[in-house]
Amino acid sequence: MIGYDRDAVRAEVVESYRSRLRSVGSIALSEEAVVEQLVQQASLVVDDVLSQFYGILFEDVISLPLSMEIGATRAEQGVHPTQSLLAAALMFEAAFPILARRLADDLDQEKTITIGLDLQRSIMVRLAVGSVPYVNFLLAKLLSAYQDERHRIARDLHDRIAHGMGVALQQLDLFEFYRDDPERAAGNVAIAREAIREGLRGTRQLSADLWERVGDDSLEVALGKYLRTTVPRSTRTTLTTFGDETDLPWEVREELYILLREAVRNALLHSGTTEIHVELEGADGVLRAAVSDRGCGFDVVATRQARRGGGLTSMRERAALLGGTVNLSSRVGEGTTVEVLVPLAEDPGLGPWNGWGARSDATDGGGTRDVDRSG
Image 1 (spheres, one colour):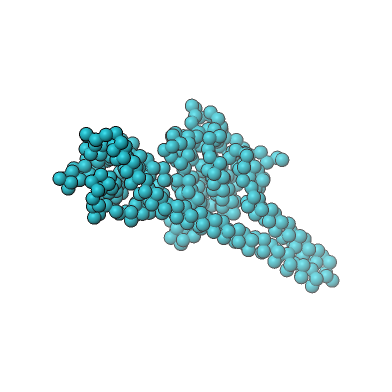
Image 2: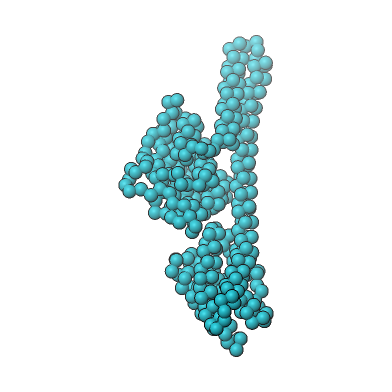
């Protein structure tokens, strides 16, 4: 009798669970392997409750490794934990009415409540176990992103600052050697002086990169300040914004600032551009941020095959921490665009970030403007 009830209850709960996942358009249904994992998980949760109710331990009821496997799969796919919370809530909604009806028809309210508590406990234990891989995923991404940042700073110190200081010392040595030739010696001093000035500018820029953040400013203000103080006057720069970013969490603003700053730096260092355009727009549940230049461009496929572009890897990892993606497009001789897409959610309980950027027309809350660098 128990075996029959077990199979029937499991089948009914699984079907109800599938239906609820479909009703909310859960991404879990996009891959059959993930669906199978969730079906197994729902079956095991039902077994947990049945074993408590009947006082019998089914041999296959304890399977927490499955929760670890599900957590690892979602972490690898970059699925935000709120999706797991939503799936857990839907599992409870699917299972409780069925279990209460089948097991507690003639029982008192206290035992019905006990069934609900057993069900919640089973789901939450598995949810907690499944969250561990995602925490490890976040820690690994954070470590990788900040290691890349340290490597970038080390490269800049070596390639720009140390090189400039080396040039200056060499020219000062030549000054001593050509001291009896005033004109040539003066040239050596002039070159040394310029190398030191360039090193000082580089040091200040590195310091700014390390310390400057959005802070109490808006993302628009922080980006405008960075463009104004970093981009040479010979390079035209525009900043386009649409929407109100006041509801955007501070950690998202800070990470986006770092991402866009890196994209601007890359454009300045590698593209030879005379134009840089920065765009920031929230619409249709997605925050889009992009940096475009009109520089030399490059072959994206060849660069990937050569495994170059460590900065882009760091940017992608930072975007992944926001549940977003980075897209790169470039053509030789035409320029490059780095685009960051971060999902927004109208309901803060169902997504990583709350809504931002709704606008009624093309100019509401923003627009395109040249960055003023007169100050």
